[in-house]
Image (cartoon, rainbow, N blue to C red; front, side):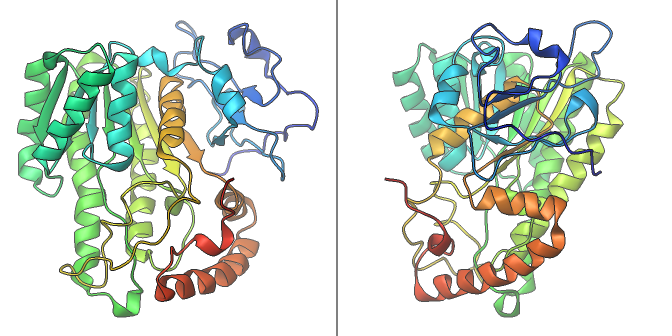
Amino acid sequence: MRGARGRGASSGGVECAKTSSALPPSLRGKAGVRAGGSRSRSRSRSRSRSLTLAARLRPTWRSRGRGPGGNKILNNCSEAAQDRLGTGKLSENELRGKVVWVTGASSGIGEELAYQLSKIGALLAISARREDELERVKKKCLEISSLSEKDILVLRLDLTDRSSHEAATNSVLKHFGKIDVLVNNGGRSQRSLFVDTNLDVYSAIIELNYLGTISLTKYVLNHMIQRKKGKIVTVSSVMGIMGAPLASGYCASKHALQGFFNSLRTELTDYPEISIINICPGPVQSKIIQNVFTENLAKSIENSGDQSHKMPTDRCVRLTLVSTANDLKEAWISDHPYLAVCYLWQYAPTWAWWLMNRMGKRRIQNFKSGVDADASYSRKKK
C-alpha cells in the first residue's frame, strides 16, 4: 500500500505531530527526531506508535504513511541521536523483564541481539542449529549482565524442521510461562547468479527464510492471541524492498516475508496489542556472507571480502530494539547509498531500475574479482 508522503525534515529544527507531548522531555524539540503519533491505552489502541529517527542526512529523509500510524519508517540515526534515545519512553529499556525468543542467535545480528537484550534485563530464549555456539553466547550473556542461568534458555532449533516447531514453542512456554517477543532472525543470504544456480538452492532458501519463519510464527502467534498481546519482530532486509543481482532467491524470500507479515497484520486488527514489526537492515558487519547459499548446496563461498565498510552490528541491533520498543510497523536501518535506493524503489521505480542496472553490473564485477559485492559504492568510514 502506498501511503501519503510526509513532509521532509527541514534543515533547521524538527517537525512534530500533534502528539509530540507524548515524547519525554529529553526528546521534545530535538533536531533529528520526529514523532508521528502514539498508541494510547484508551481510544486509539489500534494505532501503532510511530517514530522516525534521522540524522541531518543529504539527501533529506522523508517518512511515509497514512495518518498518525506511519506505515513506512526510516530508521537511520547518528550516534548523537542514539544517545538521546538512551532514556525515556522510547528507549529499548522498555524490553526489560520481557521474555524474548531470538532465532538465529548463534552469530551475527542474532548473537548481538542476545548480548544487548541481556544487558537490558530481558529474559532470553536463544535458538539456532549449533547448540555449542548457543552455549558460548549464553556464557557471554551471563558475564555481561545480571541475568542468572534460569533467565536464559538455550534451545536448539532447525527452522527447516517444521515438525519440531510446536514442541520448541511449548518448551519456551514451559520454561518462562509466556513469550512476549518473538524475533524471527534465522536465515541465510545468497551470492550466485540465477543462470549458474541449481533450483534446489532456491527451494532451500524459501524453506529456511520463508516457510520456516512463518511456521514458527504460527505456533507463537496462537499463544499471543490467547494472551491478546505480544510482538512479532521479523528481520527482513532492504532486499525485501528492492531487487539486486547475486541474490535473486534471497530477495524473493524477503519479499515473501514482507508480503506475508503485512497481510498478517491486517488479520489481527481485533488484537491491537499484538504488533507485527518488520526490520529491514542494509549491509551489516556480520557473518551472513560467510554462510551464504551459492550456486549449489554443497559449495560455500570462497572469499567473503572486506566487510568493514558496512554498518556495525551493534548499531543495527540498537536501532532494531528501539524500533521494537516503539512498535514500529517497519524500520529501514541502513547507511547511504542503500537507504537512498530504497526510497527510489518506493517513489521512483523507473529511476531505481536504471540505477540498479548500473550498480548491479559493478556488483557482479566485484563478486567475480573476489571483493565484497557492495564495496565499490560504499565509502569506508574513518
